[in-house]
Amino acid sequence: MGTATGSTFDTETLRRAIEGNTGNTLLALYTDDAEIRIVDRNTQPSHPKVLHGRRDIAAMLDDIYGRDMTHRLDQCIVQGDRAAFSESCEYGDGVRVLAESMITLRNGKIAEQIMIQAWDE
Image (tube, rainbow, N blue to C red):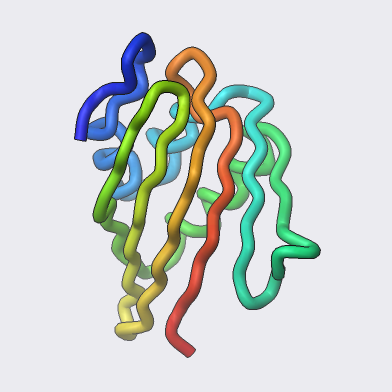
């Protein structure tokens, strides 16, 4: 873990944001015009879910952090203006979710993210 050279992106801040109780700290890590593409069993690669801007991202984070679940940052690698991280989550009933993300950074904030997620069924 560490900080990207020449930026203010810090993986410990990412850890605290992901593992926190609200999405507010995580939302602060995104640029105003950030884009997230999400691929999973419901939104497959040819038709991913695409979130544009902090308003869309905030709505998603409010939904996620409003659920009875825990979040953990498992791994994060930062190289220049790119980073990748693994996140594992668990619902109160034991259902688990794994998400892998590749991000592009701009001025130390997340400008683009591609997330692939899978969960127990």
